[in-house]
Length: 369
Image (tube, rainbow, N blue to C red; front, side, top):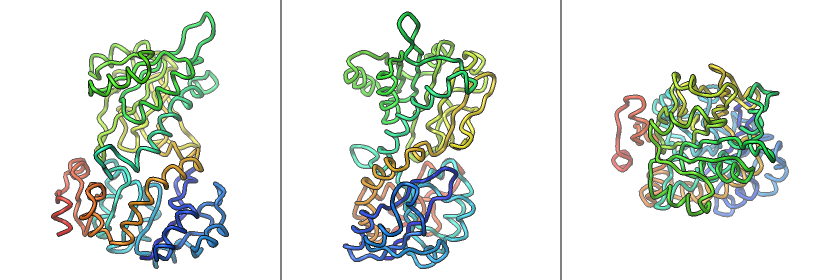
């Protein structure tokens, strides 16, 4: 198969879908790989390194025109839509439930789209977990920065100091994001509370943290009780492939301290705070009713080298399977990949996406038949 890996074009997005080591794996398995000029240069992967691994360096238009499968990091944005051709394979993060225009483009062009974030094994989401871990850690680090008075925050040090109170960090969701956010927050010395709807997960969190953080069942009442004292609220909820629920509403902001900060890690899936709108690393925060909002849609992009290595380690095995068998046979032979299929031959094959936009839903196996 002919593989193409273009340069990412979102603001401050320096990750790349393939490393030189990944290219070598594809080439050794008999595939041809095109890399867009400068795709990895910002994180230390030179064009020459890709060439030594067996790739051909080319421009974006040529790459899209010649490639059967496009491997990216982030979902295509409008400026990239016209590069895609009918029945091309797209393998990347998609987050379609929060992006109707992209969904319509993929359907109209009959793109065979496999989303990293919905590939699911019995043990979890293998291609989402590495970025979730990084985003969770960054959520705490970024909140520690933007709650500083310099940025309009309350001027609170998360750890406090001897004789001063620790900041109260509330984490909504005890999955990979929440767990990693809690690890950093507790390590810094903050007063941490995690909420989740799964009692078994809360028991697990209680055990691994040695009962040093608070755990609560996630409910509307518990969230409202915590907001008045919270210095930081990290939104870490995930319904794989579906739009995130709004756990903090606009009217709830009046309960919060002036200068408190909301960090919405779920922003790729529409956000779990009603007042969230996507921001960028260039302009990461905004304020509503005295509450700072941090809603950067590609958080791991600011640690792009670490993120690229973590991501491509997990996506490579599935990409090689798609390249070897094609989307149809790869998905039919692997239940994890089958759940990753979001659009195929003009049909929406992921329920969370069809529900988000009222689109007809076709079960993946039916679409592939």
